Amino acid sequence: MSNGRDVREVACDRRTAIRTIAGIALAVSRASDLSATPQTKDAHVPTRSRIVYVGCRTTRERNARGDGITVYRAPDDGAAWEEIQRLDGLVNPSFLAFDHARRTLYTVHGDGSDVSSFRVDARDGRLTFINRVGCRGKNPVHLVVAPSGRHLVVANHLTVGPHVSSLAVLAIGADGALGEVVDHHPLTGRIGPHRTEQPFAKPHQVVFDPAGRFLAVPDKGLDLVSTFRLDEAGRLHPSGAPPAAAREGAGPRHLAFHPTLPFVFVLNELSSTVMACAYAPDTGAITPHQEISALPDTFVGFSRASEIEIARDGRFVYASNRGHESIAAFAVDAATGRLAPVGWTDAAGRTPRFFTLDPSADRVLVANEDSDGVVSFARDPDSGRLLEPSPVARTGSPTCLLVGAG
Figure (cartoon, rainbow, N blue to C red):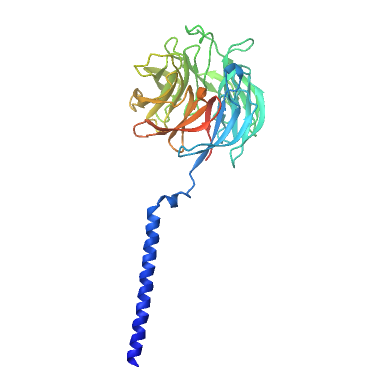
């Protein structure tokens, strides 16, 4: 009896061992299959994305091909954008801006005399029209919401007929709707020498300093950058600081304040140069101390500078060139604010009128107006160089990119 029991126990042990070995072999096989395709697990992880609003030109007079404001969902990794809304029928919504909470979007109507407001849907970024009002000027080209959130400042670029180049301040209602013009500040002065580009004052941008104390206005027609205070009632007052004078015929177009240091960088459109300036935040005084070309020394063709941005960490400044079709990169000396060229990157399109740094993914988004597309570049935060151009959207005559919520 004992021998029979031993035989049964041995047989049982053998069956158990066989099952154990088979189980181990199956587990090893499955593990091998998984290790052979490691990307399978990550394929189901959703890519982060943000909403991007694209403004454009639309009219025949501008030889434009745009339709209106287009809303996209833009993956952070540089993949193609998904169009989620297009607001057709808007005339030249060529520059866009948010309120501080990003609940309302405002647009100029370039070459016209109006600005419009739209409500932003917090769920998907879609826009709903609120209202459209006059801005007491011709060809509004830029706008910004005041630090208080109660006023919108608009740069009216042209002197035409009854309209004089000016700054206009509009009231903003509690619902984001635009109200009446509460202040209108005509701009006059000694014009620059360029007969066609500088026939009168041409304010091209309005931007508040990082403290929200002063408003800076580059004037392409007067070769000046002036600063103003905006009081609680929405009235503009000259800061009292002498305007910063650019070289005659330079044509200051846009500027960018350093995020933490007392420097400001001014882009001159007509001379394709960047002025590095000291900034006095207590008085609003801007003092140029360096002028550097936005173009490489070897370039001899026609080109006009258009946009300037500074990285969030303040280490690099970027400028776009229409004609050379490039984005220039400069390193910032933190001690002096002077610029040193890093290099030039092909814009991967024609007429890079506008670009912006995507704050979520350290990418640079470029609107190439005359090749009807947006290109996304990776940015090396250590060297400042732009890498890996990726076309992300086909859209007619893009002139502005506004990055919204994720």
